[in-house]
Image 1 (cartoon, rainbow, N blue to C red):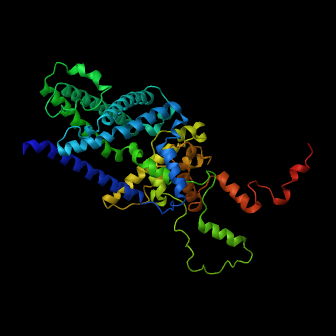
Image 2 (image 1 turned 90 degrees about the horizontal axis):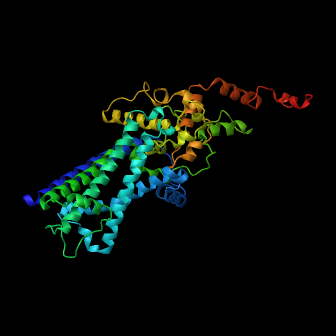
Length: 446
């Protein structure tokens, strides 16, 4: 029975981690589904191609070459190195050792590639840490990154360093055990795997006994797989949730031209009726026509659509949107990154209230309590933030929905905008001149 104890413990840890991950995914799905319905099932081919180009191909990351190339290294390393996790899981459950080693030269190539990638990831992560903590890059110094957001980013970097070091240590000890012909590690076919990086760590283990090496190898092996499982479940609480959500977010992102804004059907119908000389303003609406929405625009997360809520969880907090925002660059309070972070924080708060079966009141909502009116009206609607985002997030759509609420529900637009709208209503132009006086400027003598 004792010989199966490691396998039993491994299965318990694995199942526990998977169940906790499923619970987190369930909470995530519930929160996103709080949003209003939105049909993004059209143009499937176009959406798939965009997802392959932007999410898989990282095409928008390399617009900033240094950060982009480093990110691609970490991204590729994350995807490919984790192929070995499958072998670790099988070995852990079955009690085997390097079960895929029968692949021979292919296996040697894979393990060698994993090690080279692990080393490159290690170097890239160190450079990321230096850029984020020592180089005073402006987009990493914004006040919305103080506290948890900055710590979260650093925690992930530390996590990746530890995982890569454990991976290389595990391989180095394993390689030495194979060289020494240790039972369970040595194979008749020779050395299983290729170790282009970890072989340089082998001299550290030269004077150690087989028992000591087994302890080191097993400790690194257990800490490595447990670390991966912890990392998997940490994602829900971290900005690195984009590792999982970037693909669906890009797939369901808006395919219309950036300058196209949505119109409310209820308002459009009213305008068309006003402009139709044959329309009866007192006629009853036809059966099947949509009712007037109970609320125009958005003041809280439940008023946004599900894609906007998905995007809030997908936000990488990279700050590319804010660094491109002209309002932010000219000292205004607006930060598109903060808009997404505030939306996610409020959504998490609402989700926790639902779990506790507490009432969700308007005393604390997205508008005013998280996002101020000054931020909303600072936006120039230029779409620079939308164009800059590497994963298809649209902060502007949230800003516009909240502006719509302010104008149509509270009549709380800035004085300048109210004057312009009054002039358009009265004079058919934003300027305070009668239609008959519009060309007076042309009659003036120069």
